[in-house]
Length: 122
Image (cartoon, rainbow, N blue to C red):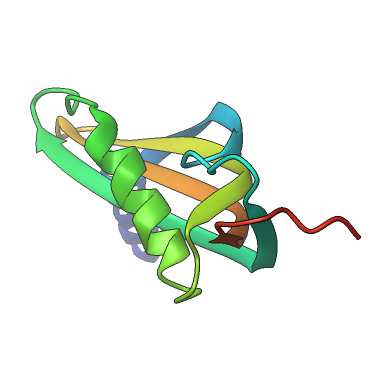
């Protein structure tokens, strides 16, 4: 009897768990335009993400998830003006029984500060 309860509870738990797939979306040299003759200084590695959940249909993807993920990453370094050498990922999670989809957009890269003016040559 105890084994049967464990099997049933394991079956229910596995049905309620979701399946997640991760996709590489983009390798990006920079997230924003840097002005000509500007000096760009790296501030450090940052990560950011943004999610959207939808019931019964796959969430419509637009630039808002990407933009929000980049903003969340740059918020970790207050002086940051752009993100350089960024890797963009998209995670899609679907529950096995219920038609619930969650899309998470993640970005990792180096936050950088841009100084406009004469370019310094080291």
